[in-house]
Image (cartoon, rainbow, N blue to C red; front, side):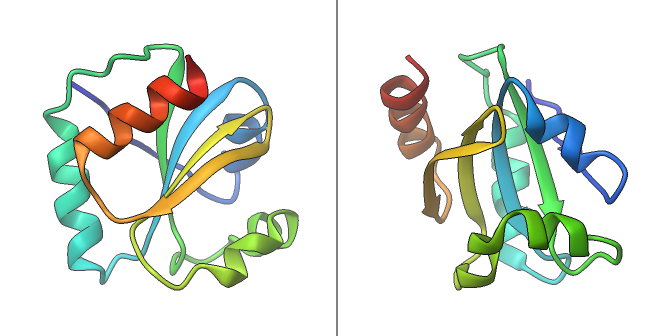
Length: 110
């Protein structure tokens, strides 16, 4: 089972700055985002070295995150999934689906 840690203005930099992360970008009003999080909660995580985190873009205090990652302004579909290593984006895609996630994790993270 997966625990998805929600990042905020105080935690995003440390969580995304080093190591590997699977980041989900969403909004609190996004039904597809909620459904994707529910689907992920039952997932047998195959890459325990990759942290599973989310950022809700409509929460206050995330201006520094958005400035540090200007590509976020281009996100037009939610949920947006991002594989990162040491603060760098390796792969991003919109939508849900565990088979797609597993395939990308295997291809990108090994």
